[in-house]
Image 1 (cartoon, one colour):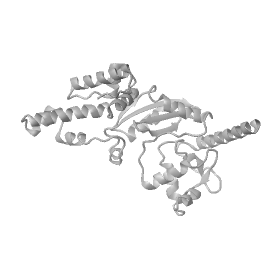
Image 2 (cartoon, one colour):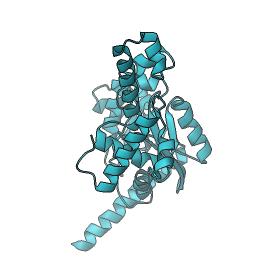
Image 3 (tube, one colour):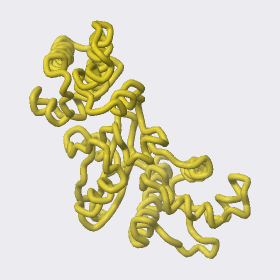
Image 4 (cartoon, helix red, strand yellow):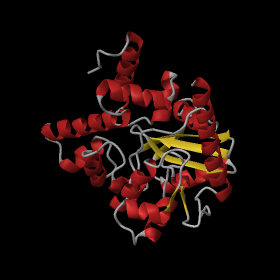
Length: 292
């Protein structure tokens, strides 16, 4: 059923995609193929389809296949024949897809993103290159480096079994927000995330997000703030494992002696980001003073 909130052209597009998926079953077209066929960004197609139907095209196709299997069984086919007749390569594939869930569950992450669709873009920025990767829930990876190739290779290694789609247009909104932050046009980043971590890591990351722009905390101060003053090394490890630079501002954590400590994306980048945040606060303060 197509949502009534869509305009006519959007509703027609979703209906056409549904018809196409029904026609080609038991094969399930990937988002890249669907985007090319219907002349729309794969990421926009995913969001539009999800908004209209409540599920992704992949889940819709999986549902069609499952219904096909059930219909064959109800019609008297043997289970084994129905499994292959519906297009499953094995019984295990049937059981995996019949309980498909949205988002990146811990088990999905451990399986290198199997069943996920990730859209990404790698672009130049004033700190070298920036990679932003998103799911339908939010940013799952944001990294910085000297060139795009290593950043993309790192994404591919971390989510080797996910469907990864290079989509500069679709991820453009997220990239623009990050670039605006890096260039000093906005003070902070408040963007939805789709990350998985231990309870301790999440506690640390939430504390980091509470550090005001332009300020820093020591690793020991963060450990004390979360009620575990002896966990300084564990806090440092949680910072080092942060998968989304800038949005979770691990760059705002330094050593007790005020030296910068480490940074996953390079110590000079950490220095530059902190300096830009300080300059932003100075400009903001000067602007406020001039208005008095």
